[in-house]
Image 1 (cartoon, rainbow, N blue to C red):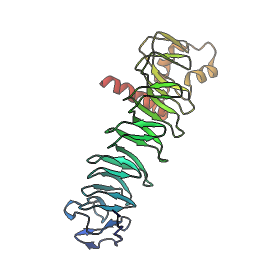
Image 2 (image 1 turned 90 degrees about the horizontal axis):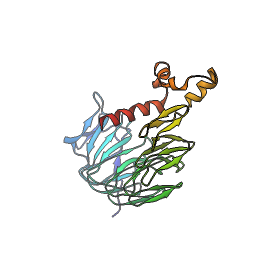
Image 3 (image 1 turned 45 degrees about the vertical axis):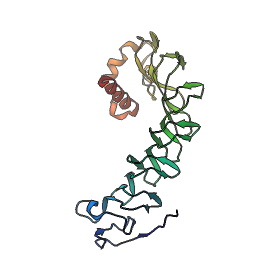
Image 4 (image 1 turned 180 degrees about the vertical axis):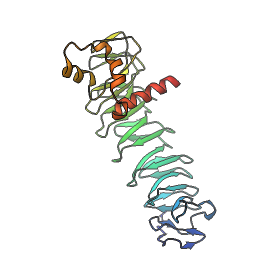
Length: 272
């Protein structure tokens, strides 16, 4: 069935069918529930509304019952779908929330069927996130996969950079050696954008940059290579074993996204 675009632009404060319209939002006539429309405080700008019939809003087709959310500029940025729907060709599951980038491209959704994207096959009923280009950012694999020489098991989470290279995965078979570091089975592995190892869990006792780390340790290699640069700047005899204590007092975590991510990871590990 063809979707008729019935959108009409209204001036601020004008009403029709009980709905006031923000001029930057195009809402289809006779498809919005006036009793379930919320406005930004003190303005005529629609924040959320519920569709009572199928409608096309900002070039995207939504089923009846969908709850649409707009930002203060009038751009659609999230929606709770009233039923399963194809959004930008992607199978988005009904009764779940989807999100959009500022340009209207899909950011995330739950899948109502398996999806083949970016050389991967994703599992049904799982959350998938996408880069603005439409390539996969994060998803749960339906089938096993060999990518960049790493074996990925069905049901495991995979994250990709914009260029399709692996950002994060979980080791599903044996120990894996990456950049000379032996990582344990079931370890979550992270990479820097340039392909270097960022983090993982050690499979055995290892001496890294002069520091002895026990098996099972989460090791994190900062993108700025703090330790190496520090040693070169100070002296070849800098006591590396005391680096952690020194860094705790002198390195501002807030200025380094990698270290912020490490803190979050450690906090999550502590809660689990």
